[in-house]
Every structure is written in structure tokens, then in C-alpha cells.
Length: 532
View 1 (cartoon, rainbow, N blue to C red):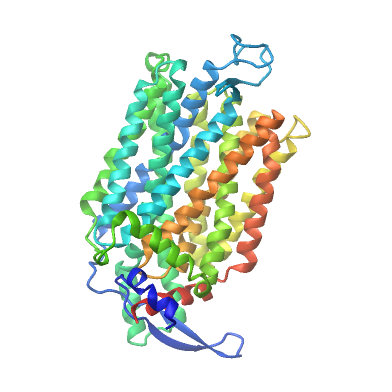
View 2 (view 1 turned 45 degrees about the horizontal axis):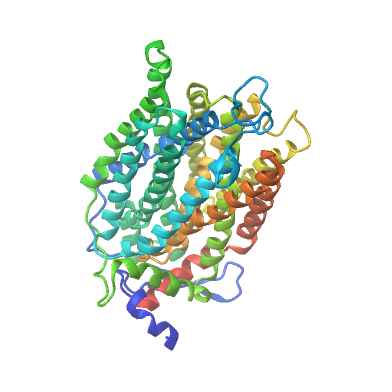
């Protein structure tokens, strides 16, 4: 071990990973022998129970994002639009008038700023705060029971922000709407990161994973077969949890119709707030069980002299400095940084266009959301069946979803030169949501499994913190670039070329520069060296 690596052992060596087993298998092409490393299991960790696994699924069922990610943005944009004025007609005019120009601005600083830019700016601020949280305390979740409490705290904060939206009763409160949107968005994003960090350790301790491990140890299966089957088990849990999120997506939208269809509630000025309360209560009722039935899988104690508020930065810096030992892991993180930025910002930009097209109607957006939710559920199960039946690698499945990720902003680019296509028509938004459901829902499952396979065992919070950082920190870039483009051109569609280039570059890197098998074995070897 080099002096450089030795010097960081006090930070990176504190984990529950034991030395891996090492097997030597013939190279597939019959060239050299390759070292296949398989991470050892900590048999002191409790076996995953059916009740625990279902509570894990149900949490994600409730944490489906309909409220904090969808309706809250719509409500914020709606209040801001009604509080703004048409810059062509001048102050005092209405952005929603029949003769309005289609532009809408609000007082901002010493001048004005378009509503679309303000929404994108709020997203950028949200991602900046989220990045700070993940980098500061994210990887501290690998120690003791801190990770468990992290998820609980950010979940409660998100619940509180959603209930507080009952106070958004008039356009004059658009600034409060912006604050609550940011709080809800930040805490919701953090729940996704810390929830995902529990996934690798959970997957390693399922009855099937333990059984596969035992078969490998007594020589019934080879290391290569063990890796394949264990990867499929990870994909099973990842896909089922994603499917549950989509089922929750459907269930939430269907429940919302109980408020949005009857005239008694549909005509109430507070109906949008009532919908948010209903969505949030659904999450509370389903999400609380994970905190009750999650079994204790404690990490090691915090190293002497360290603090929970500083260990995260030190771990991330130490991990980044070892990128040479984990090239495929870090290439994936960089590429995912670009891909997540492109995809997240594309979704936000299309949502802005969609909200304006449908006049911020919660009912119409609910129907559209249902189309996405139903196709998402079907596609997640379909992709999983195809992968399991033909034993297709995670990367190949992920590549299929990447193609559609690139095509979505490409379609938006068409809208720069014509009003006939490129997200100018109602049918296009319906088509977008259906296509998104069919191909982008599996994207989330496979991207998470890719990260789980490339993460050193036992350093789950650290590397999923970096993964979350790649996902969230990246989106500080896209929204700020796009809002600057929109401010300069006054055209929302001018942002799509940048997003197309971003998604294309990221996808090419993942397709040709990330080798999951080599990356997985390097990760196991790296984790072992920290314990040597």
C-alpha cells in the first residue's frame, strides 16, 4: 500500500467491509488470467425480512414526487404568473389576458425577470442547497446509525413544507411559494439520495443474496456466475422499488381526482392546496413504516477526533483523490453529472412550457401525470422481465434509456424554427409524458443499480453521496445556463440545443468509457485495501 493511501486509512478504512475473496478466472477471449474479486458479506448484519423489504418499497411508493416535484412547482409558477405583468403591455397588465404576448415578468432587483427564469433560478438554488447538504453530512451516514436519522429528518422537513402550502392563498404570496418550493424540493431530493444509500446494504442481505454467497463459498457456482446473479438480485430490488414509486404515482393521481372532479371541491380557491395535503398524507401513511421496521445495520463508530459535520468533506476529498484506483466509477459519476443535468433541466423546461400550455390546470396535469405513471409502471416491469429473461447486463439496459434521453431535447429544438412541432401542441405533451414513462422510468432504476455495482462495498453512503451529488449538484449548472439564455432571447425553446448537447455528450461517455465489470472488481479491491 502506498504512503498516500496509508495516510488516508483513518478516514476511508472505517467500514464494515472485510477482505474480499479472490478468484482467478480465465479471460473470456483466452488471453490473460483476470483477477475476479468478490466482496465478502458481513454475516453479523441481520437478514432482510419480508416486512422490512415491503416497508422499503412502501416508502418509495409514498415518496413518488407528485407533490414536491410536480404540483408545488405548478402552484408556484401559477401564483407568480398571476402576480406578474406582460412586458409588452406594461405594468398593470395581465399575463393571462386573451391579448397577452405570451411573456410574463415579475419585479426582480432593480428590474424585472421572466417567470420561467425565476422558476429555473429557484431550481438552481435548490440544487445548490441540496449539494451543500449531501457533501457536508451525506457520507457521514456510513457511521453508526447516522444514515438512518438523516433520512428521517429530511423526510419530516419535506412533509412539513408540503403541509405549509395551505398558506398559499393568493398571487401576492408567490415569494412564500418560492421558499416553500425550494424547501420541499431540497428535502425531497435529499430523501431520494439517503433512501438510495440504504439500497446496496439491503440488497447484500436478502435471503437470495446470502444463499448465492453460500453457494459461491462452497464452490457450487463460479465467481463470474455469482456476480451475474447478484447483479440480477440488485436489479430486482431496484426495479420493484421503482415500480412501487410508479404505483404510488398512479394511486396519488387517482386519489387527487376525488378533489379535482366534484364541483364542491373543484371550484374552491384552495383546491390546489387540498390536493397537496392529500398527496403528502398519502406519503406519511406509507412512508412511516420504513422507520419502524428497518433493521439495525450499524456502520462503524466515527473515527476519533472527527465530527459528523466535517467527516463528509474529508471523505469525499479523500475518495476523489483515489480516482486512479476507481477509474470506471469516477468516469460514470462525471458522465452521470452531465446526464442528470441535461435530463433534470429538460424536464423542468418542458414542465414550464406544459404548465403554461394547460393554464396551470391541476386536473389536466393530473390526467397527463396518470398517463406517465401508468406507462412508467408497465415499462419498469417490462424492462425487468426482459433483463431477467435474457440476462442482459445493467449497462445495456441503461443504454437503451439513454437514447430516448437524447431524443427528448432534440425534439424540443425543432420548436425553435416552427410552431407546428417541438412542444407547441397539446398532443406533444401527452406524447412526451407517455414516452417518458416508457423509457425514462427504467432509467432511474438502472442508473441506481449501475452505481451500486460500481460502489466499493461498505462505503455506500460515501459513494451514493457522490452519486447524489452528481445528480443534484449538476443541476445547478443547467437551470442557470438556461435561464440566462431565456432572459437573453425571450424564447423558452432556445434552451433545448444546450440540453441536447449535454445529454449526448454524457451518453457517449457512458456507452464507450464505462466498463461495469472492471469497475465492480476495482471497487471490491479498493474496499479491501482500505482494510488491509
